[in-house]
Amino acid sequence: MRQRWIVALKVVVHAACFGPIAWLLWRLYLTASSDPGALGPDPTHTVTFFTGRGTLRLLVITLAITPVRKLIPKLSWLVRFRRMLGLYAFFYACLHLTTYVWLYAGLSWSAMVDDISQRRFITAGLAAWLLMLPLALTSTAWSIRKLGGKNWNRLHKLVYLAAIAGVIHYWWGVKTGVKTPLEITVALGVVLAMRPILAWRNQRTALRAQSVARS
Amino acid sequence: MPHEKTSEVPAAEITPKQVYMNRRRFMAAAVAGAAALASDRAMHLAHASPVEAAEALATVKSQYSTPGLAPTPLYDITHYNNFYEFGVDKDDPAKNAWRLKTRPWSVKVEGLVKQERTFDIDDLLKLKPMEERIYRFRCVEAWSMVIPWAGYSLSELINECQPKPEAKYIQFVSLASTKDELLPWNAGISWPYVEGLRMDEAMHPLTLLTFGLYGQDLPNQDGAPVRVVVPWKYGFKSAKTIVKIRFVKSQPGTTWNEMAPNEYGFYSNVNPNRDHPRWSQKRERIIGAPLWKQWQPTLMFNGYGDQVASLYKGMDLIKDY
Image 1 (cartoon, rainbow over the protein chains, first blue to last red):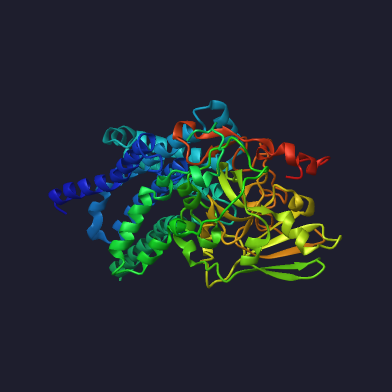
Image 2 (cartoon, helix red, strand yellow):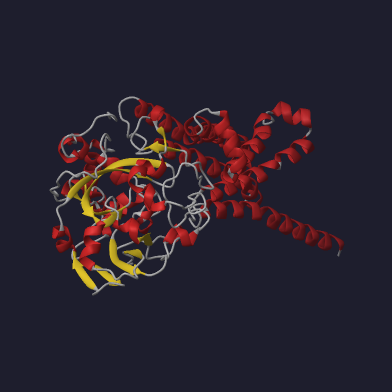
């Protein structure tokens, strides 16, 4: 992939990730100024699901990059979008957390402590955000050098836990019996399951190559 | 939205025209119109805004209406619904409830009554004078509205049915026909939707057999053609789109209670002191209010304690939630 195309594609990805947020902020501004219905009858609910679902989708897309690269070596250049997408996922997660802190808890510490200690879906959501925080903080090239590739890789395995905690947070947050989180759960399941499957496949090809070389 | 203003005239008369002819609906109509030539979905869009087509419903004032409340805009009442038969998201019922055909319609009364009967909807509409009842509406999900319903006390119909003395409970069955409804796979509940009340709750004058809101027929997504409204209980107790009323001896099954008994009790009286496992019930989000004043404290029995607290004398409402 030529550099020019990568740059062009990055512009597109930025637009695709930031566009929805710009739209949301614009509607939020309208809601507060001229049109109280700009975000629907319940803006708090709208913003919560918009940012929450956005986070999980971006996480799954980020996690899809590695298996897709391994499956289709021609698409190896996709790795150059991984950090960017991961950071956007964290950005959406921050907006989601802000929605909770500001619109639900009304910036009240006691309400938040109550929620975190008593409501497991909030605990799971906070855990997911906390797991993403060190990853966002160590996303720079400088951090990779400083930590060393091996350590950095090990640390960034936390993204699996973060995504799983995020999906659990979604399931625990919806009504018992409601299955709206199923699609994103399946998607995450696929991108996670592809890792051991691809590793196993690689191992087999390697073994076969070895035995061919020996004979 | 002046919350302190008491309405001297029925809300249907004071509601500004722009609430009905909302800009958003103009947009939907425009989109529908533009697409009408090409697409079947356009028909759905056009149907998704049923409110201007609704028939006017003449109402008289009622002593049971709650004074001093400003009704939630009609658009919000008709576009923020929990009606899982038509989809799980809040805006799904507004998009899908056009599928429901509300004529012909009848309500079957069965069980422990002198004689089982079937009422035609048009006879039910004429049974008693239609009253306007402005009630608070509190959803178990911690949001609330103020809705100007139209109907008469359920007790009027119950008296007409002459239940036997052994009838201690009443069960409502909502429509579930795959022809009219989506019955989505991801809703989790089983159909038909059933709800129930203890007989003294059902006989309470505040319990409303409801046919309309904002002075017109109930929009489909709000439970057309007939539903109950029990203003001191969480919204899911107020069964929509009723096809059957059963008089029974013991506590009947109710949908959400059977689904998750630890979350939704049979009584489900609005109670700020008993939290739902997933959220606090101490306060509620006012639908249609500006973001910076969207929260208000929740009142015991949703503010109807003076009228209904005596029904629960001697009961532990934390245990019998």
